Length: 504
Image 1 (cartoon, rainbow, N blue to C red):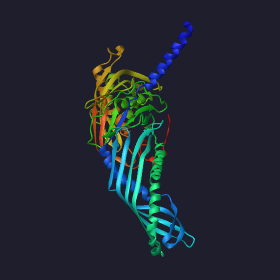
Image 2 (image 1 turned 90 degrees about the horizontal axis):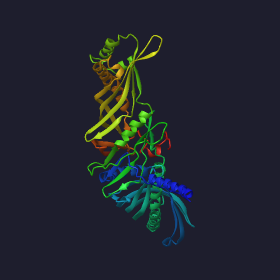
Image 3 (image 1 turned 135 degrees about the vertical axis):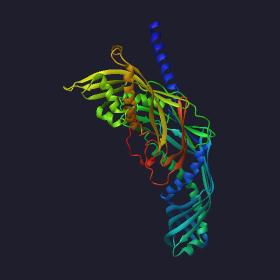
Image 4 (image 1 turned 180 degrees about the vertical axis):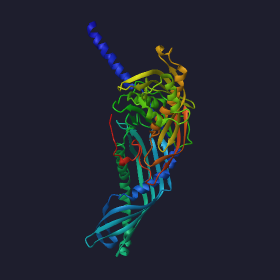
């Protein structure tokens, strides 16, 4: 009996562990908060976007049949084609958050000028021509629901759509325009009826077309030859009365290994602010995953020859000549000289209020190459370099730079009696300050792409460091010109995405 119970208990234990692991909360590496100010600006920018879109888009044909009793015509079949909106005005338009639901769009007292081609067929006549249609009293309301799919792409749904045009006036043009305009009024009512039936399906189709583009977004972006960055949504957006939060995974992976790091993200809370349109919180986890990914990919290992060091040293009394002369004093070398630096562990990230530091545990080897091409180690030392991280937003990227604060040098026991530690500390300080950090900062200049929609740029940006996360406060600006080109494949260029994609 006991032997039968044991497998059952083990099975229950395994199922319980699976349940616990699947129910654990996943916290974001990046949290983006959209405020009411962004929605208000979105109304203004959205009108420009809609205007551009509508001027390039033809509406579906409008067909029907009506009897003209005053002309004693049993029926007239009509078809309006090539329908284009030439101008429109939505003076009373608003966007507002609906807590726990989505974003409500409302517009009323709108007007639109439409041009169209027409064709009439009846038992007694048939004709074609052009016409202008003026619509007034345009009203629309609907709620945009924001969710995510299994791949972390944002998905939009239209709910509670209601659209109506109160008045329509049609004016025909052509040789017989006087005749046609005489029975234009009886035709306006069926045109208005058909148009009102079409509006919500048209809007719904546009939302579905947008979703098709959203499904092609590259939420996994290649940063360089070492890493990928995952910007996928880990949950549906959180919506309150005052803002909308997007929780993004925000994790780096080595280029050839899409496995989550051994450490997990921790929760962080954005401060309650509303002065900026957008707030982006970047967790310490984001930077720790970058450190781990680059370390795993071997990006922190570098060997510098004398010539390479020369190219990055400041040529002054504290530069290369002074450093090498100190080494020569100790070893009287005539052979080529090399420095090999290797990170022994992933650099340690620390975000404290007003302070962003990076501690780099590493080893340094000073090497020389003999006449028979054999590489010999002069000395090997371990050290920890403590650096301060400077931050700035350039374009749509977060750019970091390193400056050396201090370092701690550790020499092997066997070497301590023969080597003057202080002299090598001075040498190592110069190599790090004038040789290694300029190389690292040159790499860091490419920056990390920040999530932003197509043709939207950041303005009036500010960066603050809190405990455990970085906060970017920024306003947004819609770029109508074609000068701005997509630079990040995560959230822009919706129907222009042809870039590199690698699914998880």
